Length: 573
Image: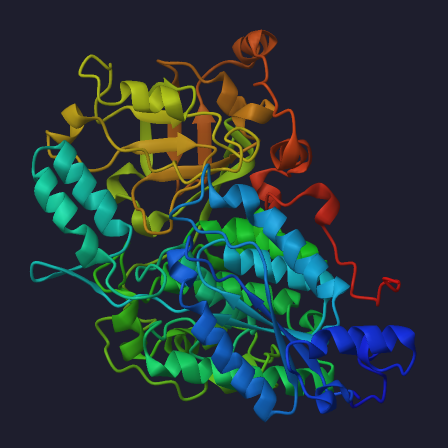
């Protein structure tokens, strides 16, 4: 029984002496569960995104066992269940296409089963928002536990960062500065332990967001996957979720507007991924919290980046943890945070971060002497992005933040791959590379292709960055002067669809402007000649394309926005 003396949800399955209660208990007993586990104690679902096809999450079986240990210790009954696992490294055409599908899997698995509270095992990029979104739609007590980052990559005496090193070394190969043999040799050196990307990519960013939102215990963001303290955190999370059920501490009490504002500001301070924009907008939408794209600029754009981590800096997540991790960062921006925001451990954010100490000031800088000033997400608008586009200034080249150049247009990713290495391509470092039809509908799924590789003839000049614009996303491990999430997207008839080779484009990040220097009359004429791409004919692709919202709204499905709670469904017999 919960503290308010209301029966727990699970009693509707296990708590009746009639035929249906007999069936529910009896079927479960075929696994050897003793009868006293059905005595009304909290039933805790362990939502597991384990998969050998998702390398970041391949150790989640052992993590789940630690959670179970904690649940039992606190007097609960843990029951593990699988949901769709989204591996950014293997899943095509992009894991983002299936984020909303996985969230539906989570939501319906929680709602349809005898679950009183849930532990969310999350790791690889899209598993974190998918689980948060699905659980938010049910609004039961929930706690997150991330899988943790890999150990630092090591290659010939140097640290190399997951993802970031790939982009760097692949460009070196294309420029003739690295042999293919050395490139291949680096594969086993980059990823040498269990866990997710050890750069401040999307996985580490979202693990940080879970902690900043108050949805995980302190230190969740940075403990390495293979560190024993990750197992300790899982066990403590198992204990805590039972207490949360008894206290009826639901997600809606934690995921408030103040929590999302804290997360936005924290994302800036860690130099977090642009992907956090779309994911937090989607989670807020499920929770019914008013949050919009402009909030990212208004709340976080001027906050300095305190963390010197790849891809913006030098160090990696293992170093970040040893330096004190996210509590130190949040403590150093505490004057900007809602310190009274509640967290899953029953304490406030202010209480959780109080007294956090930094053990390596090279990795985590002070607010007064930051790694980079004004490093949050900048939101751009103009006739090329009426509903907004984003850029991460901390990962961009300062001299390109104000730039005017000639457009070199690629109609889709196949067109890009077919022509980018062509020596006859009319392009130089002053041009603006434009990629179309890679947004939510266009790819579909909004793949991480926005950080387009540069043309070899530009690389050979020693140029390592150009302005790039698309309706796509980019990996949080990537870098460069890359404008992303241009909304509306090309496939939805946004202005990006109308850009042609030779058009002049102005990028003004300080002025928050993205402008296509083409007259309104000419754009009207071009629009009359434009035709939308063919739509998918069946299955999830069809449902997704017909209902996905644009990037500035979080790219959720329109019929999933909002919460339905978790009332006990009708009997199954």
